[in-house]
Length: 190
Image (cartoon, rainbow, N blue to C red):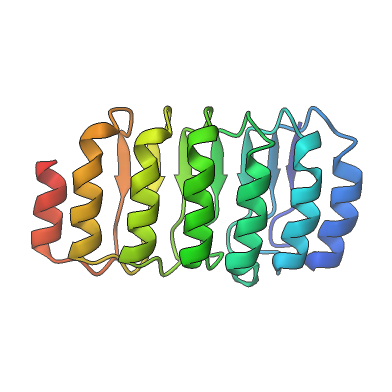
Protein backbone atom coordinates (compact mmCIF):
# COMPACT_ATOMS: atom_id res chain seq x y z
CA UNK A 1 0.00 0.00 0.00
CA UNK A 2 2.96 2.35 0.49
CA UNK A 3 5.59 3.21 -2.09
CA UNK A 4 8.60 5.27 -1.03
CA UNK A 5 11.02 6.18 -3.82
CA UNK A 6 12.43 9.44 -2.51
CA UNK A 7 15.81 10.88 -3.47
CA UNK A 8 16.47 8.13 -5.99
CA UNK A 9 16.86 10.59 -8.91
CA UNK A 10 14.39 8.70 -11.07
CA UNK A 11 13.57 11.83 -13.10
CA UNK A 12 10.74 12.16 -15.59
CA UNK A 13 11.57 8.97 -17.47
CA UNK A 14 11.58 6.91 -14.28
CA UNK A 15 8.32 8.48 -13.16
CA UNK A 16 6.74 7.71 -16.54
CA UNK A 17 7.71 4.04 -16.16
CA UNK A 18 6.55 4.02 -12.55
CA UNK A 19 3.25 5.65 -13.51
CA UNK A 20 2.56 3.00 -16.11
CA UNK A 21 2.98 0.36 -13.38
CA UNK A 22 1.28 2.23 -10.54
CA UNK A 23 -2.08 2.46 -12.30
CA UNK A 24 -2.32 -1.30 -11.75
CA UNK A 25 -2.07 -0.75 -7.97
CA UNK A 26 -5.55 0.44 -7.01
CA UNK A 27 -4.85 -0.06 -3.29
CA UNK A 28 -1.82 2.25 -3.24
CA UNK A 29 -2.39 4.57 -0.27
CA UNK A 30 0.90 6.42 0.08
CA UNK A 31 3.28 7.61 -2.63
CA UNK A 32 6.55 9.37 -1.75
CA UNK A 33 8.55 10.80 -4.64
CA UNK A 34 10.52 13.59 -2.95
CA UNK A 35 13.78 14.82 -4.45
CA UNK A 36 13.69 12.93 -7.74
CA UNK A 37 14.40 15.67 -10.31
CA UNK A 38 10.81 15.51 -11.56
CA UNK A 39 9.66 18.28 -13.90
CA UNK A 40 6.28 19.17 -15.40
CA UNK A 41 6.70 16.31 -17.88
CA UNK A 42 6.86 13.81 -15.02
CA UNK A 43 3.95 15.53 -13.30
CA UNK A 44 1.89 15.00 -16.44
CA UNK A 45 2.68 11.25 -16.32
CA UNK A 46 1.59 11.05 -12.70
CA UNK A 47 -1.50 13.19 -13.29
CA UNK A 48 -2.61 10.82 -16.04
CA UNK A 49 -2.83 7.88 -13.61
CA UNK A 50 -4.31 9.73 -10.62
CA UNK A 51 -7.88 8.68 -11.55
CA UNK A 52 -6.79 5.04 -11.08
CA UNK A 53 -5.43 5.72 -7.58
CA UNK A 54 -8.72 5.93 -5.72
CA UNK A 55 -7.17 4.74 -2.42
CA UNK A 56 -4.32 7.27 -2.47
CA UNK A 57 -4.37 9.24 0.78
CA UNK A 58 -0.83 10.64 0.83
CA UNK A 59 1.32 12.17 -1.89
CA UNK A 60 4.77 13.61 -1.19
CA UNK A 61 6.38 15.05 -4.29
CA UNK A 62 8.37 17.68 -2.40
CA UNK A 63 11.84 18.93 -3.28
CA UNK A 64 11.31 18.62 -7.01
CA UNK A 65 11.89 22.28 -7.86
CA UNK A 66 11.79 21.53 -11.59
CA UNK A 67 8.10 20.67 -11.20
CA UNK A 68 7.30 24.36 -11.39
CA UNK A 69 3.96 26.06 -11.89
CA UNK A 70 3.06 23.91 -14.89
CA UNK A 71 3.72 20.62 -13.09
CA UNK A 72 1.86 21.75 -9.99
CA UNK A 73 -1.04 22.79 -12.23
CA UNK A 74 -1.15 19.32 -13.82
CA UNK A 75 -1.19 17.72 -10.39
CA UNK A 76 -3.78 20.13 -8.94
CA UNK A 77 -6.15 19.22 -11.77
CA UNK A 78 -5.48 15.52 -11.17
CA UNK A 79 -6.14 15.90 -7.43
CA UNK A 80 -9.79 16.32 -8.34
CA UNK A 81 -9.73 12.67 -9.43
CA UNK A 82 -8.22 11.53 -6.13
CA UNK A 83 -10.98 12.10 -3.57
CA UNK A 84 -9.18 10.22 -0.78
CA UNK A 85 -6.12 12.50 -0.67
CA UNK A 86 -5.63 13.57 2.94
CA UNK A 87 -1.99 14.74 2.84
CA UNK A 88 -0.28 16.60 0.01
CA UNK A 89 3.33 17.77 0.24
CA UNK A 90 4.42 20.15 -2.51
CA UNK A 91 7.26 21.77 -0.58
CA UNK A 92 10.13 23.01 -2.71
CA UNK A 93 8.36 22.53 -6.04
CA UNK A 94 8.23 26.17 -7.21
CA UNK A 95 4.42 26.33 -6.95
CA UNK A 96 4.27 29.99 -8.02
CA UNK A 97 1.14 32.08 -8.59
CA UNK A 98 -0.32 29.85 -11.32
CA UNK A 99 0.17 26.73 -9.20
CA UNK A 100 -1.40 28.48 -6.21
CA UNK A 101 -4.39 29.44 -8.34
CA UNK A 102 -4.84 25.84 -9.53
CA UNK A 103 -4.51 24.49 -6.00
CA UNK A 104 -7.06 27.05 -4.81
CA UNK A 105 -9.50 25.85 -7.45
CA UNK A 106 -9.00 22.23 -6.35
CA UNK A 107 -9.23 22.77 -2.56
CA UNK A 108 -13.05 22.86 -2.30
CA UNK A 109 -13.27 19.42 -3.93
CA UNK A 110 -10.54 17.84 -1.81
CA UNK A 111 -12.97 16.89 0.94
CA UNK A 112 -10.58 14.45 2.68
CA UNK A 113 -7.61 16.84 2.75
CA UNK A 114 -6.30 17.38 6.29
CA UNK A 115 -2.71 18.48 5.57
CA UNK A 116 -1.23 20.69 2.86
CA UNK A 117 2.51 21.42 2.90
CA UNK A 118 3.83 24.22 0.71
CA UNK A 119 7.13 25.31 2.29
CA UNK A 120 10.15 26.50 0.31
CA UNK A 121 8.17 27.79 -2.66
CA UNK A 122 8.81 31.55 -2.54
CA UNK A 123 5.05 32.04 -2.38
CA UNK A 124 4.36 35.75 -2.14
CA UNK A 125 1.37 37.71 -0.87
CA UNK A 126 -0.51 37.45 -4.19
CA UNK A 127 -0.18 33.67 -4.23
CA UNK A 128 -1.15 33.49 -0.56
CA UNK A 129 -4.25 35.60 -1.18
CA UNK A 130 -5.33 33.09 -3.85
CA UNK A 131 -4.89 30.22 -1.42
CA UNK A 132 -6.47 32.11 1.47
CA UNK A 133 -9.72 32.60 -0.44
CA UNK A 134 -10.08 28.83 -0.85
CA UNK A 135 -9.03 27.74 2.65
CA UNK A 136 -12.50 28.12 4.22
CA UNK A 137 -13.78 25.80 1.48
CA UNK A 138 -11.42 22.97 2.49
CA UNK A 139 -13.70 21.36 5.09
CA UNK A 140 -11.16 19.15 6.91
CA UNK A 141 -7.92 21.06 6.51
CA UNK A 142 -6.20 20.95 9.90
CA UNK A 143 -2.52 21.51 9.00
CA UNK A 144 -1.10 24.11 6.61
CA UNK A 145 2.63 24.61 6.20
CA UNK A 146 3.64 27.86 4.50
CA UNK A 147 7.09 28.15 6.05
CA UNK A 148 10.12 29.42 4.14
CA UNK A 149 8.18 31.51 1.64
CA UNK A 150 8.01 35.23 0.80
CA UNK A 151 4.93 36.18 2.82
CA UNK A 152 4.91 39.72 4.20
CA UNK A 153 2.51 41.62 6.46
CA UNK A 154 0.05 42.00 3.57
CA UNK A 155 -0.20 38.23 3.22
CA UNK A 156 -0.60 37.85 6.98
CA UNK A 157 -3.48 40.34 6.95
CA UNK A 158 -5.24 38.39 4.16
CA UNK A 159 -4.70 35.14 6.03
CA UNK A 160 -5.88 36.63 9.33
CA UNK A 161 -9.10 37.75 7.66
CA UNK A 162 -10.08 34.19 6.69
CA UNK A 163 -8.81 32.25 9.72
CA UNK A 164 -12.08 32.64 11.66
CA UNK A 165 -13.78 30.79 8.77
CA UNK A 166 -11.35 27.86 9.15
CA UNK A 167 -12.31 26.33 12.51
CA UNK A 168 -10.55 23.00 11.86
CA UNK A 169 -7.22 24.59 11.02
CA UNK A 170 -5.25 23.67 14.15
CA UNK A 171 -1.69 24.06 12.87
CA UNK A 172 -0.38 26.87 10.71
CA UNK A 173 3.36 27.04 10.05
CA UNK A 174 4.71 30.36 8.83
CA UNK A 175 8.31 30.29 10.04
CA UNK A 176 11.02 32.04 8.02
CA UNK A 177 8.82 34.39 6.01
CA UNK A 178 9.10 38.16 5.53
CA UNK A 179 6.42 39.54 7.81
CA UNK A 180 7.04 41.85 10.73
CA UNK A 181 5.71 41.69 14.29
CA UNK A 182 2.65 43.62 13.00
CA UNK A 183 1.75 40.73 10.70
CA UNK A 184 2.32 38.21 13.47
CA UNK A 185 0.11 40.20 15.87
CA UNK A 186 -2.69 40.33 13.29
CA UNK A 187 -2.49 36.56 12.85
CA UNK A 188 -2.43 35.98 16.59
CA UNK A 189 -5.46 38.21 17.09
CA UNK A 190 -7.50 36.29 14.54
